[in-house]
Amino acid sequence: MGFDRHKPYSIARPGVPRGLMLLKGKKGVVFGLANKLSLAWHIGQALHAEGAEVLFGVASERFRDKSAPLVESIGSPLPLICDVTDDASIEQAFAELAKDSGKLDFMVHAIAFADRADLEGRFVDTSRPGYALAQDVSAFSLIALSKAALPLLREGGSILTLSYLGSTRAVPSYKVMGVAKAALESAVRYLATDLGPEGIRVNALSAGPIKTLSSSAIKGLKTKLDLQERIAPLRRQVTGEDVGKAATFLLSDHASGVTGEILHVDCGFHALGSWEE
Ligand code: NAD
Image (cartoon, rainbow, N blue to C red; front, side, top):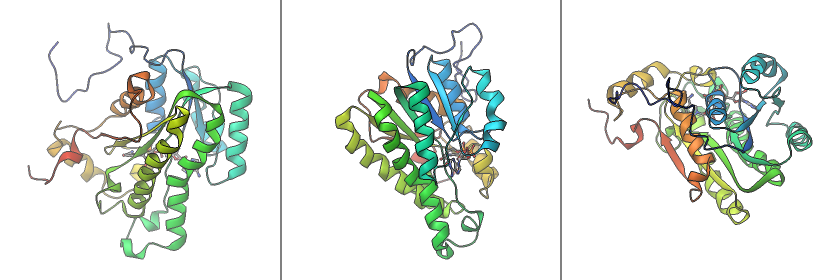
């Protein structure tokens, strides 16, 4: 079969077994499900296709109601409610996990939020509460969820978060979220250092732009998607399936020696030094 660079290899091609069962026997939780466009959903589906038992976490009852049919379609129980700005909510979610599911092999953090006002206008006008909110929801939450997950994670377990290139490059529309992602990536390295001796790996995927509820709130998404197709080395947009497959790798034993890593899943965009066509 010829290779079509515009069509990413699919783990669900007709006639080919669904996945390689890289995660058979593993169980874990994916936080950050909002709807079928969510990266949390793409990741959850990929992990499920590779044999994992996948649980989900949502921010509120509203998101739980909306995502119930999705998770049911892959045999997962009703998502846990976990508002990461509220310690009691985190505690409650992990108490439920401990009671109903016992030990876990992985935890995925696919959560971010910033006030729209702080994503518009000039970065220099970022408000103090807006800065604190973006850091709290998008970066500190990884630390808080990792701490809560630790007693449940088996040795050899793995934590994964989602970042974006705006952490290391100034992307005009990303602003306060870029600073939060920089903190998030730094937290990945510190958590990897802390938890490595306990046999827990911590990594991030830095994904290229994909249309979701959150990314649609950021100005210039269409421009970013067009640019991907025109100049990214693979000359195409990144898909949810690309992200799901990379997540599968990092959460599997195939990545047993990988921790503290920020893996770009952006069709090579981050490697460019100039945007010439
Ligand atoms: P999404 O809107 O589907 O997911 C964001 C999730 O964060 C939602 O489920 C939302 O409910 C959750 N959330 C917000 N505040 C919360 C809170 N207080 N408590 C608990 N959950 C809360 O969008 P997405 O694009 O799938 O985003 C998932 C992750 O991927 C984010 O970290 C985002 O920055 C990252 N990411 C996205 C892209 C992209 O282009 N879509 C690219 C790179 C990285």
